Amino acid sequence: MNAQTRATIDLMVLMMATLSGIAIVILAVMIGGRPRWSVLRLSATAIILTPAGALTWCYRDQRLMPVIAKGLLVAFLVIDVVIAIGAFRAIRGAADAMDSVNPAAALIWGTLWLFWQVLTLQAALKR
Image (cartoon, rainbow, N blue to C red; front, side):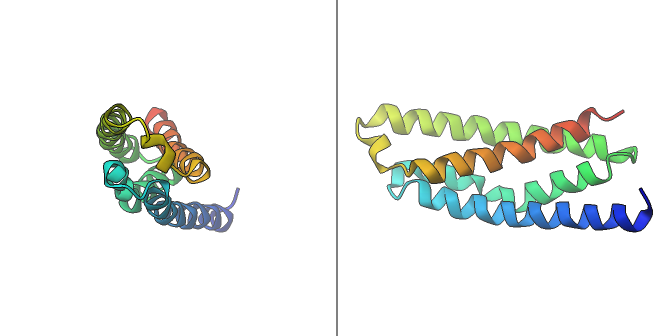
């Protein structure tokens, strides 16, 4: 692959990461309108974390990028734990908590959110 093709692919990945970050935020707001689901708004950090994860994946051949990717994975993990605890409390706190959830938005949100974490994990494991 020549340098121009690589640069084009990297730019496309970074643009998709930025659009995905914005979509994750919009979907997190659409998932639940009730205040008990406000923990999902923490995924607004995707606006920063997904492009950073994509950047580490695009330049994973450089020595510093796997280190940065590991740091991003720690941030993703902390946010995942907080979201999981908040979701558990929302479900446990009220029997009708799941009635306010938009299932399509939740599925797309979860897919996008986890996809960029997997891509960052691949960058972190690159030797």
